[in-house]
Amino acid sequence: MIYSKMNNTTTDIPTKIDWAAIRAQFPVLDQEINGKKLVYLDNGASSQMPKSVSDRIDAYHKHEHANIHRGIHSLSQQATDAYEATREKVKNFINAGSLEEVIFTTGTTDSINLVASSYGRKNFKEGDEILVSEMEHHANIVPWQIIAEETGAVLKVIPMNEAGELLMDEFHNLLSDRTKMVAVVHVSNALGTVNPVEEIIEAARERNIPVLLDGAQSVPHSKVDVQALDVDFFTFSAHKMCGPTGFGVLYGKKNLLEDMPPYRGGGDMIDKVTFAKTTWNDLPHKFEAGTPPISAGIGLGAAIDYLTDIGMENIAEREAELLAYATEKMSRIDGLRIVGTSDNKASVISFLLDGIHPTDAGTILDQQGIAVRTGHHCAQPVMDHYGIPGTMRASLSFYNNEEDIDRLGEGIELVKEFFG
Ligand code: 7TS
Image (tube, rainbow, N blue to C red):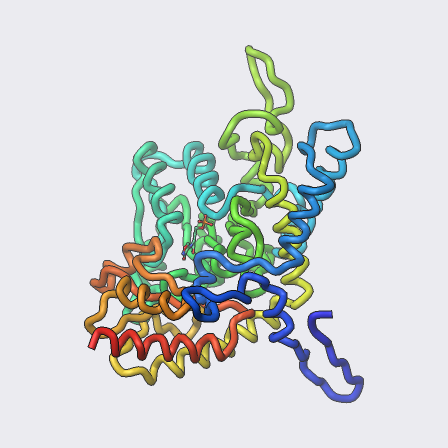
């Protein structure tokens, strides 16, 4: 048992979780980098994998591997069942309405490209507007630019303030009869801002405009309920939620997905093929051409089991605690400026050190065994907003601890000493 729930019939005793025991389930954290104990603070780029997930993937390769959806033989059916079990787990995890609404992709980037290409090609025309925000990851900008170029649609941008919060008045002003899609990040990877997506969805809904939320940084850190949100499309990646690379999800409302043409053609996505005409398979398979990364899909299922076992509410609570600890600690460091200071933030701290280039600082931190990301974080418009080339970014996960944050603090002091 990784944690214990203490239930008392007379008083409400909160769930007590042994976070140290949870951390011990991540073998990768138990190593030295450059002669120092690893402090991994780059979870926004990719989170680490607990042993239960890597064991599950390993077991698949050792005992269950076969192609799926096509074999009459037992091994193929077993692999299909294991892979499709992930669809059920995803459905429950995000509370999708049906399995048909859960499309497997190779990740957030792939999911957004699917919607931009398939929905956009069918529905956008000259003069239509696609609304994105100033704090998007490139994955939620470039696919829309590509389809805009093809269809004559144009991109409009919701601006943000200095704290890194969307200017909601501007958002409401930008909505019009020309708006044909609102595509916004749920939680910013570069700033940590949690956007007011309920307000965005409600306003778009009044005008019958579909909303896509990029959930790459929200799903790993808090409970997401796509039906409660009433969102039309929702995207995320397995490798940011303790799962493997090469796998992700597109949630879409069934009526929208049914109206959309296939994104890629090939095996598995067809009903009947003749040289005269081909008809499409039903949802969700219509959007899943070719052999998928089967082991990665099974790995995502194991990751969801793992996160569910701990409880997303507990994860959110622990990460909020770590964020508060880190913010307080870093605010006290002379010459350190936090970029992204919204009151509503996920566990991401982007920062700058006076007169020191982020890449130089990151290199010195790496020598201390401390992994942070430096650069523009694939969100160049955010950096343009602040007039900076990039930041250092510490992105925390529930398996980090106060000691990691203390080590980061000490590392930053060393960077400052090094650069005088
Ligand atoms: N959207 C957001 C908000 C992201 O943070 C990322 C990846 C993506 C989309 C793309 O996800 P992918 O799995 O398809 O690559 N973000 C980061 C990051 O912050 N550092 O490295 C990758």
